[in-house]
Image (cartoon, rainbow, N blue to C red):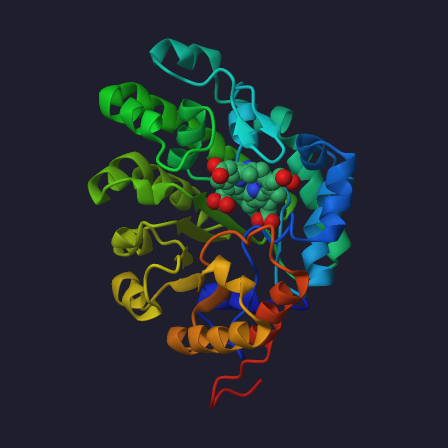
Length: 346
Ligand code: 1CP
Protein backbone atom coordinates (compact mmCIF):
# COMPACT_ATOMS: atom_id res chain seq x y z
CA UNK A 1 0.00 0.00 0.00
CA UNK A 2 1.22 3.49 -0.88
CA UNK A 3 1.37 6.10 1.87
CA UNK A 4 1.58 8.88 -0.73
CA UNK A 5 -0.71 8.15 -3.67
CA UNK A 6 -1.21 11.74 -4.87
CA UNK A 7 0.37 10.95 -8.25
CA UNK A 8 -1.83 7.93 -8.88
CA UNK A 9 -5.00 9.68 -7.78
CA UNK A 10 -4.19 12.66 -9.99
CA UNK A 11 -3.59 10.39 -12.99
CA UNK A 12 -6.94 8.71 -12.37
CA UNK A 13 -8.61 12.12 -12.34
CA UNK A 14 -9.58 12.02 -8.67
CA UNK A 15 -9.90 15.18 -6.59
CA UNK A 16 -6.64 15.90 -4.73
CA UNK A 17 -5.67 18.29 -1.92
CA UNK A 18 -2.72 19.58 -3.95
CA UNK A 19 -0.90 18.60 -7.15
CA UNK A 20 1.84 15.96 -6.79
CA UNK A 21 5.35 17.07 -7.73
CA UNK A 22 8.42 15.39 -9.21
CA UNK A 23 11.13 16.55 -11.62
CA UNK A 24 12.27 14.97 -14.85
CA UNK A 25 15.90 13.82 -14.50
CA UNK A 26 15.59 14.32 -10.72
CA UNK A 27 18.14 11.54 -10.11
CA UNK A 28 21.27 13.15 -11.45
CA UNK A 29 24.13 15.53 -11.58
CA UNK A 30 22.81 18.47 -9.51
CA UNK A 31 22.91 16.17 -6.42
CA UNK A 32 26.32 15.94 -4.67
CA UNK A 33 25.31 12.48 -3.41
CA UNK A 34 24.91 11.33 -7.04
CA UNK A 35 28.28 12.83 -8.00
CA UNK A 36 30.00 10.71 -5.33
CA UNK A 37 28.69 7.52 -7.00
CA UNK A 38 29.44 8.94 -10.47
CA UNK A 39 33.11 9.31 -9.49
CA UNK A 40 33.31 5.67 -8.47
CA UNK A 41 31.28 3.78 -11.07
CA UNK A 42 30.75 3.97 -14.84
CA UNK A 43 27.33 5.01 -16.15
CA UNK A 44 26.10 1.58 -17.24
CA UNK A 45 27.60 0.03 -14.11
CA UNK A 46 25.35 2.36 -12.12
CA UNK A 47 22.38 1.28 -14.25
CA UNK A 48 23.18 -2.43 -14.15
CA UNK A 49 23.90 -2.78 -10.42
CA UNK A 50 20.52 -2.92 -8.67
CA UNK A 51 21.94 -1.62 -5.37
CA UNK A 52 23.40 1.47 -7.08
CA UNK A 53 20.34 2.10 -9.24
CA UNK A 54 18.23 1.78 -6.09
CA UNK A 55 20.32 4.21 -4.08
CA UNK A 56 20.34 6.81 -6.89
CA UNK A 57 16.59 6.43 -7.50
CA UNK A 58 15.76 7.11 -3.84
CA UNK A 59 18.19 10.03 -3.35
CA UNK A 60 15.77 12.75 -4.59
CA UNK A 61 12.96 11.29 -2.45
CA UNK A 62 15.11 11.67 0.66
CA UNK A 63 16.91 14.88 -0.25
CA UNK A 64 14.29 16.91 -2.17
CA UNK A 65 11.05 15.36 -0.92
CA UNK A 66 9.41 14.65 -4.29
CA UNK A 67 6.08 12.77 -4.44
CA UNK A 68 7.41 10.04 -6.79
CA UNK A 69 10.62 8.21 -7.54
CA UNK A 70 11.72 7.56 -11.12
CA UNK A 71 13.82 4.55 -11.89
CA UNK A 72 17.49 5.38 -12.45
CA UNK A 73 18.30 3.99 -15.88
CA UNK A 74 18.45 5.40 -19.40
CA UNK A 75 16.37 5.21 -22.56
CA UNK A 76 19.44 3.86 -24.40
CA UNK A 77 19.42 0.51 -22.58
CA UNK A 78 16.81 -0.56 -25.16
CA UNK A 79 19.03 -0.10 -28.28
CA UNK A 80 21.75 -1.81 -26.25
CA UNK A 81 19.49 -4.79 -25.56
CA UNK A 82 18.61 -4.88 -29.28
CA UNK A 83 22.29 -5.44 -30.06
CA UNK A 84 23.75 -1.99 -30.77
CA UNK A 85 26.82 -0.85 -28.91
CA UNK A 86 26.06 2.22 -26.76
CA UNK A 87 28.78 4.12 -24.94
CA UNK A 88 28.21 6.98 -22.56
CA UNK A 89 31.05 9.42 -22.69
CA UNK A 90 30.78 11.41 -19.49
CA UNK A 91 30.36 15.13 -20.17
CA UNK A 92 29.83 14.45 -23.92
CA UNK A 93 26.75 12.23 -23.88
CA UNK A 94 25.79 9.07 -25.75
CA UNK A 95 27.85 7.58 -28.57
CA UNK A 96 26.77 4.67 -30.78
CA UNK A 97 29.83 3.74 -32.87
CA UNK A 98 27.96 1.60 -35.46
CA UNK A 99 24.64 3.35 -36.08
CA UNK A 100 21.88 2.06 -38.38
CA UNK A 101 22.28 3.47 -41.91
CA UNK A 102 20.37 1.11 -44.22
CA UNK A 103 18.23 -2.01 -44.46
CA UNK A 104 21.23 -4.37 -44.12
CA UNK A 105 22.00 -2.90 -40.71
CA UNK A 106 18.68 -4.27 -39.43
CA UNK A 107 20.31 -7.72 -39.57
CA UNK A 108 22.64 -6.61 -36.80
CA UNK A 109 19.79 -5.99 -34.38
CA UNK A 110 16.87 -8.00 -33.07
CA UNK A 111 13.79 -7.88 -30.85
CA UNK A 112 15.44 -9.44 -27.80
CA UNK A 113 14.09 -11.54 -24.95
CA UNK A 114 13.87 -8.78 -22.35
CA UNK A 115 14.17 -11.27 -19.51
CA UNK A 116 17.63 -12.13 -20.78
CA UNK A 117 18.86 -8.67 -21.72
CA UNK A 118 17.11 -6.32 -19.30
CA UNK A 119 16.59 -8.49 -16.23
CA UNK A 120 18.91 -6.15 -14.28
CA UNK A 121 16.32 -3.39 -14.64
CA UNK A 122 13.56 -5.65 -13.29
CA UNK A 123 15.84 -6.65 -10.37
CA UNK A 124 16.50 -2.97 -9.63
CA UNK A 125 12.75 -2.21 -9.67
CA UNK A 126 12.04 -5.00 -7.17
CA UNK A 127 14.75 -3.75 -4.86
CA UNK A 128 13.60 -0.11 -5.15
CA UNK A 129 9.99 -1.06 -4.36
CA UNK A 130 11.18 -2.91 -1.28
CA UNK A 131 13.39 -0.02 -0.12
CA UNK A 132 10.72 2.62 -0.81
CA UNK A 133 8.38 0.57 1.32
CA UNK A 134 5.30 2.40 0.03
CA UNK A 135 6.58 5.90 0.76
CA UNK A 136 5.95 7.15 -2.82
CA UNK A 137 5.08 5.50 -6.15
CA UNK A 138 7.80 4.40 -8.58
CA UNK A 139 7.77 5.62 -12.18
CA UNK A 140 9.22 3.32 -14.85
CA UNK A 141 10.00 4.61 -18.32
CA UNK A 142 11.17 4.04 -21.86
CA UNK A 143 12.11 6.23 -24.79
CA UNK A 144 9.51 6.64 -27.53
CA UNK A 145 10.45 4.67 -30.67
CA UNK A 146 11.07 7.88 -32.67
CA UNK A 147 13.46 9.28 -30.02
CA UNK A 148 15.33 5.95 -29.86
CA UNK A 149 15.55 5.86 -33.68
CA UNK A 150 17.15 9.33 -33.50
CA UNK A 151 20.07 7.96 -31.46
CA UNK A 152 20.23 4.60 -33.30
CA UNK A 153 20.60 6.35 -36.68
CA UNK A 154 22.41 9.59 -35.79
CA UNK A 155 24.78 7.74 -33.45
CA UNK A 156 24.99 10.61 -30.98
CA UNK A 157 23.08 13.53 -29.53
CA UNK A 158 22.12 16.38 -31.86
CA UNK A 159 19.99 19.51 -31.78
CA UNK A 160 18.29 18.70 -35.09
CA UNK A 161 18.83 14.94 -35.75
CA UNK A 162 19.03 15.62 -39.50
CA UNK A 163 20.52 12.21 -40.32
CA UNK A 164 17.70 10.45 -38.49
CA UNK A 165 15.12 12.53 -40.34
CA UNK A 166 16.80 11.98 -43.72
CA UNK A 167 16.82 8.23 -43.00
CA UNK A 168 13.06 8.32 -42.37
CA UNK A 169 12.29 10.43 -45.44
CA UNK A 170 14.55 8.57 -47.91
CA UNK A 171 14.17 5.00 -46.57
CA UNK A 172 10.68 5.03 -45.05
CA UNK A 173 10.16 1.27 -45.30
CA UNK A 174 13.34 0.54 -43.40
CA UNK A 175 12.50 3.27 -40.90
CA UNK A 176 9.08 1.76 -40.23
CA UNK A 177 10.59 -1.72 -39.82
CA UNK A 178 13.06 -0.31 -37.30
CA UNK A 179 10.35 1.63 -35.46
CA UNK A 180 8.23 -1.53 -35.22
CA UNK A 181 11.18 -3.52 -33.83
CA UNK A 182 11.78 -0.82 -31.20
CA UNK A 183 8.05 -0.75 -30.40
CA UNK A 184 7.84 -4.53 -29.91
CA UNK A 185 10.91 -4.47 -27.65
CA UNK A 186 9.55 -1.50 -25.68
CA UNK A 187 6.16 -3.12 -25.06
CA UNK A 188 7.82 -6.26 -23.67
CA UNK A 189 10.24 -4.14 -21.65
CA UNK A 190 7.52 -1.96 -20.10
CA UNK A 191 5.36 -5.01 -19.34
CA UNK A 192 8.39 -6.42 -17.53
CA UNK A 193 8.72 -3.19 -15.56
CA UNK A 194 5.05 -3.37 -14.56
CA UNK A 195 5.42 -7.00 -13.50
CA UNK A 196 8.46 -6.03 -11.42
CA UNK A 197 6.39 -3.38 -9.61
CA UNK A 198 6.41 0.09 -11.21
CA UNK A 199 3.26 2.10 -10.48
CA UNK A 200 3.35 4.48 -13.47
CA UNK A 201 5.18 4.51 -16.78
CA UNK A 202 6.35 7.51 -18.77
CA UNK A 203 7.24 7.46 -22.46
CA UNK A 204 9.92 10.07 -23.23
CA UNK A 205 9.66 11.45 -26.77
CA UNK A 206 12.32 14.08 -26.25
CA UNK A 207 12.70 14.73 -30.00
CA UNK A 208 9.04 14.48 -31.05
CA UNK A 209 9.01 18.26 -31.54
CA UNK A 210 11.53 18.03 -34.39
CA UNK A 211 8.85 16.55 -36.66
CA UNK A 212 6.03 18.29 -38.52
CA UNK A 213 2.56 17.35 -37.24
CA UNK A 214 2.07 14.86 -40.13
CA UNK A 215 5.50 13.29 -39.66
CA UNK A 216 4.96 13.16 -35.89
CA UNK A 217 1.81 11.11 -36.51
CA UNK A 218 3.54 8.85 -39.05
CA UNK A 219 6.94 8.25 -37.41
CA UNK A 220 6.14 8.74 -33.72
CA UNK A 221 2.57 8.74 -32.48
CA UNK A 222 1.60 5.67 -34.53
CA UNK A 223 4.06 3.67 -32.42
CA UNK A 224 3.40 5.41 -29.08
CA UNK A 225 -0.27 4.55 -29.65
CA UNK A 226 0.61 0.83 -29.82
CA UNK A 227 2.61 1.08 -26.59
CA UNK A 228 -0.16 2.90 -24.71
CA UNK A 229 -2.78 0.45 -26.00
CA UNK A 230 -0.70 -2.48 -24.74
CA UNK A 231 -0.21 -0.99 -21.27
CA UNK A 232 -2.97 1.40 -20.30
CA UNK A 233 -5.21 -1.22 -18.71
CA UNK A 234 -2.35 -2.47 -16.53
CA UNK A 235 -0.70 0.75 -15.41
CA UNK A 236 -1.06 4.53 -15.46
CA UNK A 237 0.74 5.93 -18.51
CA UNK A 238 2.20 9.37 -19.26
CA UNK A 239 3.33 10.54 -22.71
CA UNK A 240 5.91 13.32 -22.75
CA UNK A 241 6.51 14.43 -26.33
CA UNK A 242 8.56 17.58 -26.01
CA UNK A 243 7.55 20.30 -28.46
CA UNK A 244 4.70 18.27 -29.96
CA UNK A 245 1.93 20.37 -28.44
CA UNK A 246 0.22 20.46 -31.86
CA UNK A 247 -0.75 16.82 -31.30
CA UNK A 248 -2.09 17.04 -27.73
CA UNK A 249 -5.56 16.17 -28.95
CA UNK A 250 -4.41 12.98 -30.72
CA UNK A 251 -2.19 12.08 -27.78
CA UNK A 252 -5.17 12.41 -25.42
CA UNK A 253 -7.13 10.12 -27.75
CA UNK A 254 -4.59 7.31 -27.16
CA UNK A 255 -6.15 6.84 -23.71
CA UNK A 256 -2.93 7.78 -21.89
CA UNK A 257 -3.66 8.98 -18.36
CA UNK A 258 -1.23 11.90 -18.48
CA UNK A 259 0.43 14.18 -21.03
CA UNK A 260 3.64 16.07 -20.34
CA UNK A 261 4.02 19.57 -21.75
CA UNK A 262 6.96 21.95 -21.99
CA UNK A 263 7.02 25.68 -21.23
CA UNK A 264 6.32 26.78 -24.83
CA UNK A 265 2.56 26.39 -24.38
CA UNK A 266 0.29 27.90 -21.73
CA UNK A 267 -1.60 25.55 -19.40
CA UNK A 268 -4.88 27.00 -20.71
CA UNK A 269 -4.00 26.30 -24.33
CA UNK A 270 -2.75 22.80 -23.47
CA UNK A 271 -6.00 22.06 -21.63
CA UNK A 272 -8.06 23.32 -24.52
CA UNK A 273 -6.21 21.05 -26.96
CA UNK A 274 -6.03 17.99 -24.70
CA UNK A 275 -9.63 18.18 -23.47
CA UNK A 276 -10.89 17.66 -19.90
CA UNK A 277 -10.26 13.93 -19.42
CA UNK A 278 -6.48 13.71 -19.18
CA UNK A 279 -3.99 14.86 -16.55
CA UNK A 280 -1.41 17.44 -17.64
CA UNK A 281 2.16 17.37 -16.37
CA UNK A 282 4.69 20.21 -16.43
CA UNK A 283 5.68 22.80 -17.37
CA UNK A 284 8.23 24.94 -15.47
CA UNK A 285 11.14 26.14 -17.61
CA UNK A 286 14.14 24.24 -16.12
CA UNK A 287 16.39 27.30 -16.56
CA UNK A 288 14.10 29.25 -14.20
CA UNK A 289 15.36 27.10 -11.32
CA UNK A 290 18.48 29.29 -11.51
CA UNK A 291 16.36 32.33 -10.47
CA UNK A 292 16.47 33.57 -6.86
CA UNK A 293 14.34 31.42 -4.54
CA UNK A 294 11.60 34.08 -4.02
CA UNK A 295 11.18 34.25 -7.82
CA UNK A 296 10.90 30.46 -8.01
CA UNK A 297 8.22 30.55 -5.30
CA UNK A 298 6.25 33.24 -7.10
CA UNK A 299 6.51 31.54 -10.51
CA UNK A 300 5.51 28.13 -9.13
CA UNK A 301 2.44 29.67 -7.54
CA UNK A 302 1.49 31.23 -10.86
CA UNK A 303 2.01 27.93 -12.69
CA UNK A 304 -0.17 26.03 -10.19
CA UNK A 305 -2.85 28.66 -10.42
CA UNK A 306 -2.77 28.56 -14.25
CA UNK A 307 -3.22 24.77 -14.26
CA UNK A 308 -6.15 25.12 -11.88
CA UNK A 309 -5.09 22.76 -9.08
CA UNK A 310 -6.68 19.53 -10.35
CA UNK A 311 -5.62 17.02 -13.03
CA UNK A 312 -2.14 18.54 -12.84
CA UNK A 313 1.23 17.02 -11.94
CA UNK A 314 3.74 19.75 -11.12
CA UNK A 315 7.00 19.14 -12.98
CA UNK A 316 9.55 20.85 -15.16
CA UNK A 317 9.01 21.15 -18.91
CA UNK A 318 12.17 19.07 -19.49
CA UNK A 319 15.01 17.64 -17.38
CA UNK A 320 16.59 19.53 -14.48
CA UNK A 321 19.89 21.21 -15.42
CA UNK A 322 23.07 19.95 -13.71
CA UNK A 323 23.97 23.41 -12.35
CA UNK A 324 20.78 23.91 -10.31
CA UNK A 325 21.56 24.45 -6.60
CA UNK A 326 19.96 21.76 -4.43
CA UNK A 327 18.11 24.34 -2.32
CA UNK A 328 16.52 25.77 -5.48
CA UNK A 329 15.26 22.31 -6.47
CA UNK A 330 13.90 21.91 -2.96
CA UNK A 331 12.28 25.35 -3.11
CA UNK A 332 10.42 24.25 -6.26
CA UNK A 333 9.09 21.12 -4.55
CA UNK A 334 8.25 22.95 -1.30
CA UNK A 335 6.36 25.68 -3.17
CA UNK A 336 4.08 23.00 -4.66
CA UNK A 337 3.61 21.30 -1.29
CA UNK A 338 2.61 24.58 0.32
CA UNK A 339 0.00 25.30 -2.33
CA UNK A 340 -3.56 24.99 -1.21
CA UNK A 341 -6.33 25.49 -3.66
CA UNK A 342 -9.08 27.62 -2.20
CA UNK A 343 -12.12 25.61 -1.28
CA UNK A 344 -10.50 22.16 -1.28
CA UNK A 345 -9.83 20.72 2.15
CA UNK A 346 -6.71 18.61 2.75
O1 1CP B 1 26.06 11.14 -14.85
C1 1CP B 1 26.05 11.44 -16.04
O2 1CP B 1 26.75 12.33 -16.54
C2 1CP B 1 25.13 10.72 -16.93
C3 1CP B 1 24.00 11.61 -17.30
C4 1CP B 1 22.74 10.78 -17.46
C5 1CP B 1 21.79 10.50 -16.47
C6 1CP B 1 21.78 10.96 -15.04
C7 1CP B 1 22.35 10.11 -18.63
C8 1CP B 1 23.07 10.05 -19.91
N1 1CP B 1 21.17 9.45 -18.36
C9 1CP B 1 20.80 9.67 -17.06
C10 1CP B 1 19.63 9.09 -16.39
C11 1CP B 1 18.32 9.19 -17.06
N2 1CP B 1 18.09 9.35 -18.40
C12 1CP B 1 17.07 9.09 -16.43
C13 1CP B 1 16.97 8.76 -14.96
C14 1CP B 1 15.82 9.07 -14.18
C15 1CP B 1 15.60 10.54 -13.87
O3 1CP B 1 16.13 11.02 -12.88
O4 1CP B 1 14.83 11.16 -14.60
C16 1CP B 1 16.08 9.24 -17.42
C17 1CP B 1 14.58 9.25 -17.26
C18 1CP B 1 16.74 9.40 -18.65
C19 1CP B 1 16.06 9.52 -19.94
C20 1CP B 1 16.80 10.01 -21.12
N3 1CP B 1 18.06 9.68 -21.54
C21 1CP B 1 16.23 10.85 -22.11
C22 1CP B 1 14.81 11.34 -22.08
C23 1CP B 1 14.63 12.48 -21.17
C24 1CP B 1 15.25 13.77 -21.61
O5 1CP B 1 16.00 14.34 -20.81
O6 1CP B 1 14.94 14.22 -22.73
C25 1CP B 1 17.20 11.07 -23.11
C26 1CP B 1 17.05 11.91 -24.37
C27 1CP B 1 18.36 10.34 -22.75
C28 1CP B 1 19.61 10.19 -23.51
C29 1CP B 1 20.76 10.63 -22.68
N4 1CP B 1 21.34 9.84 -21.72
C30 1CP B 1 22.29 10.55 -21.06
C31 1CP B 1 22.33 11.87 -21.61
C32 1CP B 1 23.23 12.96 -21.18
C33 1CP B 1 21.33 11.90 -22.60
C34 1CP B 1 20.93 13.10 -23.44
C35 1CP B 1 21.84 13.23 -24.59
C36 1CP B 1 21.38 14.29 -25.55
O7 1CP B 1 21.33 15.47 -25.18
O8 1CP B 1 21.08 13.95 -26.70
